[in-house]
Amino acid sequence: MTGMTGSGSRWFRAELSVPDRFPNPMKPSSIRSNVRTARAGGTVDGPRLGRVSRVRDSGRMVSADRNPGRGRHGLPATARQRLLFRWSVVLVALTAMIILGFMMFWLRAQRNAGTRSMAKPVPAQVRISSQFVSPGEDEAADIVRSAMGTRDPGLVQNRIRPGDAAPSEVVAFMAATEERDGGIGQLLWLGGLDVEGMQVEGVLVEFTGRTPPVHRLALLVPDEVGVWKLDFEAFARWSRPSWGDLLEKRAERARVRVLVARDNYYNGPFMDENQWLNFALAAPELQGLLPDGIETLSGYCRKESAQAKALERIFEQGDRTRRVTLEIRRNDEAGDRQFEITRVLAADWLMPPTAFDERFN
Image 1 (cartoon, rainbow, N blue to C red):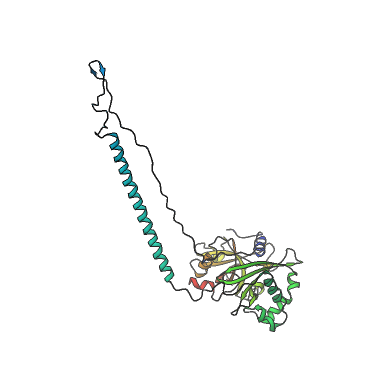
Image 2: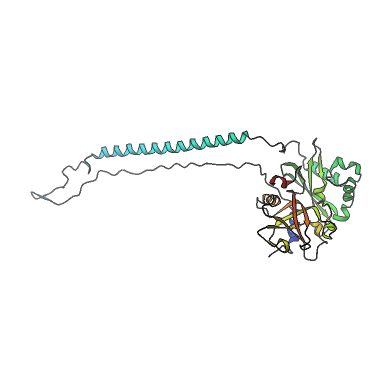
């Protein structure tokens, strides 16, 4: 049994410093068909002579073939060449007809498949990623700075998507930024990010005054009229209840934003590898809440469950770690750092209109 140990710190810090750019799952693949044509060539031998034998005829050496100008089958050399040429033309024509027929059959099948695909109705929940004009680098930075500088609860809705957080909680979090994270350093514009088909712009905020430096990912999302706002819950890596309440057993379950990686640690009620999948869970907010040398939690979900299928889909691109929003709960028979994954709410820290794992029920 193995688990993630001291390398966890570098693991999740690297992920925060360089957020993932997820490939678009709806991008169609290109299909290419190569048809190779081979041409056969050669030479036609001249007329073959019959076997030459020595016979005596009045003291002269003569050929056993009485007609040296004909082949073994009695055809002149030029006639045999014409016959071979005709057969070659026939074979080439047959080969071309076979290849042409195959290509016509393949093209017809592809056209029929395309027609069936176009006939399928487009789901109503699909959003057009280019619905609103995206902010440029300077504008995106201004939106982030304005949101972080909000101190009036009445202005929260104008600049920020608060999610489930109350405006007073948003203002309190922003006001504590310098004390908690340090001064605002550089803002790195990430451009458009693919987050479950939603239109999202990313900005990585690097703070100064802490070692190692603190980073936060600012995800900007337009509202229904195209006003771009900072998603507070993703920026704050918001958990409800808090990590402290969950780890100190004041809460049984919580919604958490974590970095998730595949792991292989099975113990206690999650010992059976045939029934459970194991994942390592990390978050900067766990620092100081776990024993020294321990920086990750273990999350488990039952194989073939909607949650297992959702996580398998998230990792099918081969990524080592991913940002995921989960609901986890403790198990009284498990260790303090072992939790069951009961929901996979989002394939990122940004909540979609519908929970991610619902599509796998």
